[in-house]
Image (cartoon, rainbow, N blue to C red):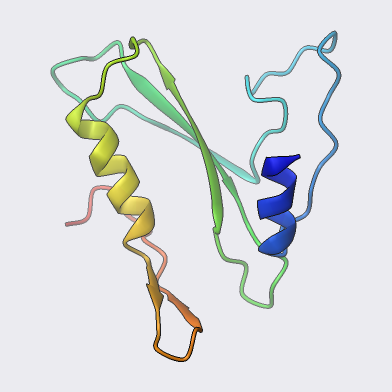
Length: 111
């Protein structure tokens, strides 16, 4: 319900979650509109991050919601996780009047 709240808040279509008995290829119940697999660490090649990106229904569809699965790692924190988070958050800017400016990052490796 929490995921659907934020999707609805950001004008993103809430897809029906499959039942547990059904096989879900995406591993998160509901696959994103775009799915990207990232291997950010040359040191830990077994680690991969599967990013499910959900886009708004606005005239210009914005990626206001992501769900990321960290495969092949334990419950420790790694520098690449901060890097992945920053590459998503840095595209948003809140102006003094409350509006949001979005510059979508198309190259996740861009500095």
